[in-house]
Amino acid sequence: MGAFDHVKTILGIILGLSITHLLKGIIKFVQHPKQAKPYWVHLTWCFYVLLLIIHFWWWEAHLRDITHWSFEEYFFLFVYISVYYFECSLLIPDNLEEYKDYFTYYYSRKQWIFGILALTFVLDFFDTLIKGKAYYLTHYGWEYPVRNITHISLCVVAMNSNNRKFHAVLAIAFLVYELSYIYRLFAYF
Image (tube, rainbow, N blue to C red; front, side, top):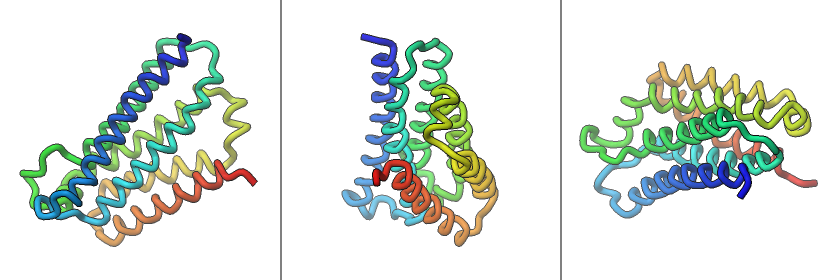
């Protein structure tokens, strides 16, 4: 078993837990619709983060090209993917008893939700550096840094805004953009 096999094992475990957490939370809206009223903006963010994780997991296949792994790189990846799990746990709490519904929960925890989401984009820069300059030049152009910096900035605004229209437009914009980004990265013409 090579170093990458160890790395992909921990990636698979934590990202699998993240996906499971989100899917279990989303299905509860169908199983128990009267327990906690869903909020469509919150649910859109759940789908967005699910899409981010799926995209991340697919893209991390490029880590196989790294022939020498250091503990620091491995530890960084562990921290990075753990942040995704934290985000999933924030979006779908184990217990909603303190809150009337997901609308109330979402706005009471928006600083954490968007702070952790912004952190994923910051960490993504470092993750890309691990793969090397040649990897970056082959796979990314100007859009990647602009995307991440814009997303970080908008997350900071979202942390400090209670404007419902802003949050609704932002959720849709992030989801649509990510779908477009994935399509353009992986479309084979």
